[in-house]
Length: 593
Ligand code: FEO
Ligand code: CA
Ligand code: CA
Ligand code: CA
Image 1 (cartoon, rainbow, N blue to C red):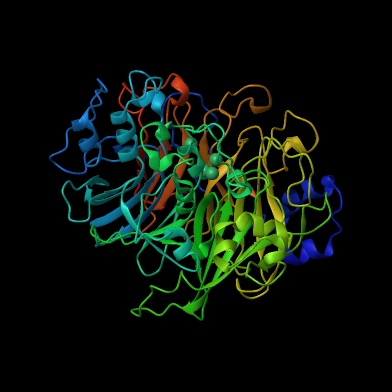
Image 2 (cartoon, rainbow, N blue to C red):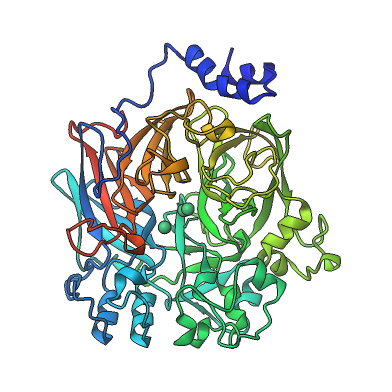
């Protein structure tokens, strides 16, 4: 009996039965070799990167490291003047996040990496408390995207300074806008400027990089305390006070003076990493929300499907299906501009931990997306995708982070992290816990094609702590050894190992006892087995993952070690700095085997 058949035939109404699923799987799959050949590591609160026995890691680069030879190296005195601002434009940005590897030849590649945000408490001697105009310009130069060439050096790679591919894209870089909301977003201008809060990523088969804008509201404020925030601004998180204070020095980020600027952010940005002079394009057909990643699936007939999560409590999961088909060598410029954006509805009974689902089209004029509900055009629907999702009955999720499709599996399963939702009051079938502090990973699949409107879903794991009660124990593939909270980064390798990165509570206390620092785990999705593979330094998030094409070298992002002035000096014993580490198996084997 296949696992699917088994699940269909069984009556799994109770939590107890759900907890038995992995055990039964283990019995069914007992003779099959685990995909996870490495010796799992324990939780750790040490200020270092720990990898399993037989593996080694090395830093590729850290925030502030030069991409060009005329730049000076990271200045520990943190002197921020005009020279420092210009220098930042030639260096790796802050808060490394999603990244993609683009092969040039067997020894060289381009790495495109998001620089999500900044940590003023680490960036400045005043810890962000006495911000100046130069400080804001310095921050603006430290966010966005870094693109650079890397070259094999021994068993690892190193950065190629001054490569023709090296470039920084930041909060002021000129960008095009395309898709149905183009004119409304441009608001009479020819271009928009900058990309912000570039969280996770995607990679197209035509060799471009997708950089996804997430918490863009953090960068906007209002100098006028009485400025009226309309429903759209409120739903997207904008308020009088920004997190970073840019509005005090740059009126572009002052909503009382430039309200239309808010609509220029919250998009997926397509970048050609092979041409440093290319102008990035904001693809509005993919919708405006707090994007996490853009998981790309190519159907046999050339149709492009992109799965995307909105990382906000009780927001939604989306799917874009292209109208135009991808054909190798043909023009690809319209593929991400024309198509249908869908939103997910996850149905089922609370306690079943599985159910059915529907993708509902967000098309102007259909499903109530019309004047009666305040929509005047498709542009309106895309700019206010969250409202559209509510109108059509999308399911409020526990903060969807990364989505990963298992391209080699027979069922073509898609997995998504729902990181946590501490404010959830009403449970639903796919999000069964109120005040969800641990998070879960959900999977869904269609009968034959990602284009179908109907799907089935099931929870793969409820993260938790076996020391707690009820559902907070987690599913029975959570053990005292592998326990973790807040799954976030997610990616399959070519063998079908599911890599899980965490961005959670690293206090190691109470409900998070013995979970240690943020970490990376690997799962065998057929058996449910999960093992911890890497532990990060103090107060970091592990986010961003890429592999060399032979899967023998892995790139992992160590984001903001020492955030909130927690005691970290990773990586060089001084100011803690976000870094990319490379990991290899000492015997030269495939990572994870
Ligand atoms: Fe940038 Fe939702 O993480
Ligand atoms: Ca994330
Ligand atoms: Ca997160
Ligand atoms: Ca973070």
